[in-house]
Length: 297
Length: 175
Image 1 (cartoon, chains in turn red, orange):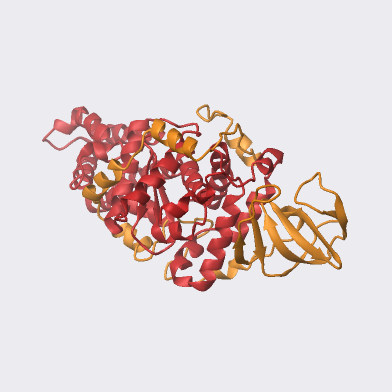
Image 2: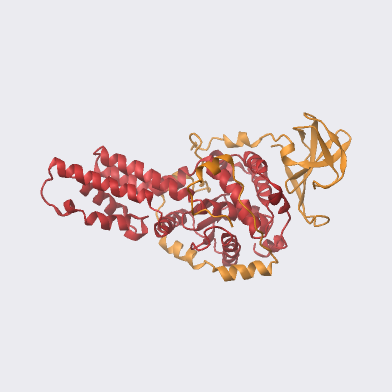
């Protein structure tokens, strides 16, 4: 089977449970593949044809990786959010869901990407963690929500996740991984099954392995600025990190995985403290809305 | 870090900030410095502390800590106090899934760890519910206004690494 068919098969398998346009750019990618001249050939390709097809396919992969399309970013985020929700459903308290969306949307409006389809949700789990997905999807666990004592602390958590999206942290990592994994398999003439596995596991790998520490520190720094722009206490993230540390000592199970895979709260606090300037310090004042979270429990 | 949150005291007096009482733990000062009567650079000095001096952390407010250095009780900035990381031990807990290198994860919900997420199947029905909760900008602004929130103009803090890596990022505009 030539490389063209390998790529097409991979796309077909990848999109079995999703529409083509939902798979981050592979919808468009597949359309472009169809237009390649060798795709319609039923005869065995010559070596030179194979080579040119591989080159064309790789060029398309490079194009996918380099794309700056918001539409593809949002589609990728929808897939990621949908997969997370496949493992943990939304909490049934609609009042909380509405509240988190109102607070989060206002903070996102202070960012450089106010026009994304910002959507927030609280996951029905007692464990403590938060997620963001490309395109503006943010999910926090009910366990984390319950640890937050003020709206300022909620804003700090949401600001951190919003910053990940603003900086396209996940999007860029997935694109890079896609290029490396799919491109290498194509070039090495590996079997179709392997290519399909790579394609289908990309989102799962992303969610499991995540980001490097520098991205987390950047999200901490810029997240507190976003929250402060919206009128919240710029130091609230320190309070959240202290709560995480304390809660981790009481209930290691709830946070064990988070602590094993995230920078330690105390280290994150040190990184934040390093960059505090006068403007940020001046914004370290509890907001008038700090107590509002009590009405949304 | 040895700071431990023991009780949370909302204290809107004075500067209207959050004062957090902590257990008293020994820390050390990173430089010779004045300890201030209030958590403000404009506050009067309550006394002096010496580099390397062991202090007890009494409370925290914003980016400040109140310490007891000998007989002197005063405030200093968090970055003037040596912060030891007691969380490092927690960070290395065996969980059956280890991070490699400097890769960290954004996952980790109980019952939803890395392995589960890798195997997770999309749930379009639940995603539709999520999408239905999306709020528009105007509603969110109105809610902020109801909470008496006031927006601020504030720049991101640029580190050396960031400045280098974002030279070509035209989309990242300052507010």
